[in-house]
Image (cartoon, rainbow, N blue to C red):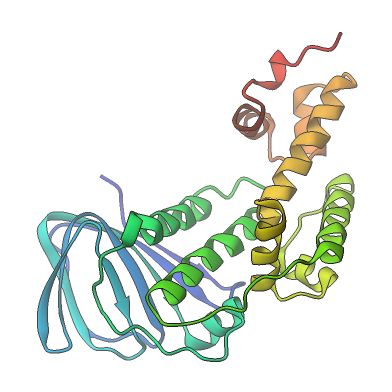
Length: 268
């Protein structure tokens, strides 16, 4: 059985993620200083909130506004969920929002399980810190959770992404330079280079290319490793030079991207 984990992102506005899996634990009436955004992945959870007793089966969201008092317990033999905690200031900084109306409903159904899956991806990032770009991947995962939560369920409106060809060219140039120099790349640095906010940069990049900034970084690292392999470098050396933590990490990403392992790359 998976154990509970609590991740505190001191470098990202103090945002936290609670990976919960329990059967008998209960939570007395309490409130959170900031927003609490969660999704029931397995079993059912229970609340008393806003004067009502609620049961949240798998596929339900749990969306709490700051200082909203509630209890918590497992309403089935076992419940598993991911819950993100973020202050109002953190949400405004990550999403670049001024207006933040909050959540009108505590336990809506997750349409298409999109927010459930976004929270699971964030948990995956936090439990897989092997990449030199771990923080960039985490920043994007947090942004996805907050953007989905507040635009779909919190009545917030993000500035529509426009066409930013100059910024996208600059982004690609900066990524290529960073990979060639063996540097870690952060969303904050890339946003500063392009003179766009981090949230807008993510959305503008996806609109223009269909891929996030981290997706471009990963592809650039793989292309760099591939060139080194074709030049005869051992896979372990190519992995380190391209910014992967080790050869195993390169192999996993190489297979996902190219469909083969580095050992199957044959030069004629």
